[in-house]
Length: 463
Image 1 (tube, rainbow, N blue to C red):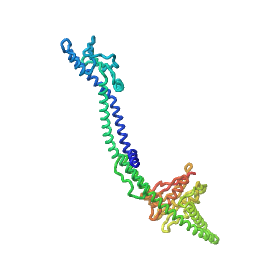
Image 2: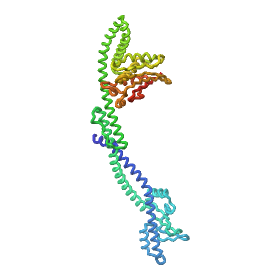
Image 3: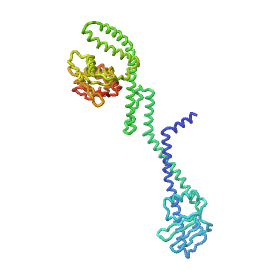
């Protein structure tokens, strides 16, 4: 049973299928060659017969009074392989050689007016019906346009010769097809099957152990489609391996964040109670600070609750509403801690009546992350501007600074977590979170400009 399965597996392989198909196609090509070749073999056979008959007739004409012995006539007929030979001219017909004539002739053929189609049809007619037939063959005589030679022959020797020729053609075709198939098989096996086997083996090994660097495909350096597939597979495996490591990192981070959020929520609840007590203090400075403190603690508690609820760093669906943008921008500016040793101005250029349609808390986080990055990019004195305008049915927000710009190495992975950080010690989560929240709103965020004169972010939101 195992032997049969191995044989079956071999014949199902690409190499075996290529070998069999090549043999079949070469044999089909040989069949197309065989059909006209056997027809012309029959024609040449009959032409040679008429040439022999003509020579025999000339030998009779050269004898005195056309008289030869009976033994010589029989010998000539035997050599020609005919029952009778008739020489026809424009005005007469002369029986040159004959033996006992048959009662009837089964078929007549004129070699002077047959095309390729008629030759093929007559050849297959001979192979199918010619074993016991007697045929008449009429052939023109070279250099005598008004003369012809007619002979009556048994078709059986012709059929035997055609069958022998066909068998030889078959053996030759089989040998050529096997040789061609073997050469094609070696070529295709070297050029296609072996590289495809390497690709398949690499895919299987990568599926079983994607973290193992040694199982990755190593491009052979070919410049054709196979080489392109090898290079693309290597790129895909590298990126997938990196993505898997990143997912593992995120999964571990998610578990850690869930644990931290659980304890942090309890700590923030205590801070919330303390802030409620501060709200009772009759001091103008305390009353000015407490609302901001309470709002920040409430946001932190909500964020911890959402993280624990989903068990991951995922985001809830936006709960959109129409609200004024300028007060939200003011909250963002007051929440950002500006360095004491630098003169950094944060200007709110949004008009008082400008509104957007978004989740207010989520959009607060978007602006906070982007604006905090802009402030941190200013190493000394500088300015951060936030403006907004309507463009059709979209709100366009522009956040720009006059810092040193984003390094080239960080631009490629700017919105990816853990890879897009510009400053040392950063996680790269700020812009990643902002991107995720903006996309959830059906909008987009991109860098319009970044160079040594500063950086400009564009946020587009549908109204």
